[in-house]
Image (cartoon, one colour):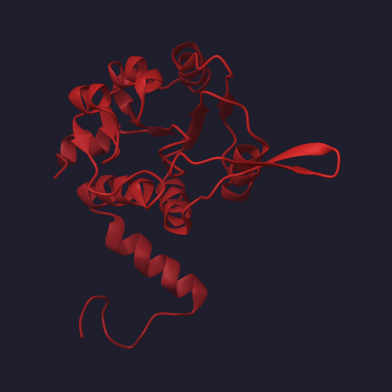
Length: 190
């Protein structure tokens, strides 16, 4: 469980992509005369990102490699800050995002899975490792998800933060009301 006071201090959530938003697999092939790459993103993670945004918590992506699939998914989710550094130099990239946005390190969460994420995780206020992260990442994490990367771990992080803030139920109700899907009975009652 996440401490409510820590959850209230989070003003930005950073996400690694491969191994966090995806299962880490990359599908590479050729179409006509050019290479193509596909990644599998979990739909529940997408709604988790949107709910963080609706709660006023921006989400940024910091990846150690460039991919058009990442760019497309970020655009779909309305994520404006996307850093894709083929050298996996994530720390200076994230630092630049924070400086531009005026957000302190201790007001950030970051979700990672592999060694390139360790420098960021050591600096943020809420370091998070996905369930299938390497041991070095888990060792510096305050929170380790029960769900593996690419299988809904981002959604789990979003729910954990938003529930600790006490806004999850309201956001769910608002989401369903906007869709016209609110049943006669209260949520959760059967």
